[in-house]
Image (cartoon, rainbow over all chains, first blue to last red; front, side):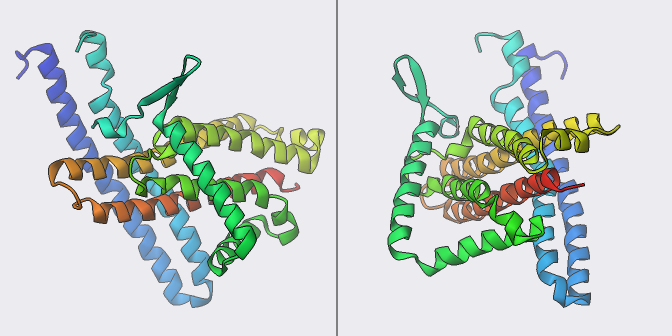
Length: 93
Length: 210
């Protein structure tokens, strides 16, 4: 694999890293968000009178947890569409 | 992928104007027309929305007197973001928040507004005294990272929606991305709400008297 041309090698590694990174970046926030929802639902069932408070906090914290996945996505956008390494080694392409 | 990258539409005296800036202007026109319409008719749905925003700020700030002082700022944010995140349902208009510059500008405004409100509420000396502690360096780091995370969160969510719609359109064809557009609408409203709640929390932590 490593006797490829440098441009091809960088592209291949970029695609591999993008795929693996997106998989990990989707799985981990999903698991953590699932736990957060679970605990919030537990609380809502136990004390229905604070369900509104819990729901608002839950939505905000879910959005914050989701941000980690969004960061991964942004990094992958950067290495896919504006790869700094490709620009450095091959200024034309 | 050319649809999702902001393009230069035209030049004004040599300054490039991107299509997301044009989208911002159209957003402003929509908001101004909406305000003019609301002033004349006062629809119930909008009154409920405003009440919801007010209740949320009251819940975060603790008292309604305190909350009323920040409704102009936070309300402007939430109205602008609600319209701007969802303007893409009109064809050929670029979402303003799809360009990193719009969320970044909003976050810088929030950064300065938080400190301004802190100064206004506690006085310059009082605010400095409240901030002066061994944790000052952590405060500064959290200020900067809050600005970054607010802007990147909004930008990433909106951009992700646009990219998915563009990819499905390219792969499948017209009408196929409709469910994803609905998902983008939900995401836009949710992100406007999240941005608003986090800003309100930051202001609340700055103006609280210690």
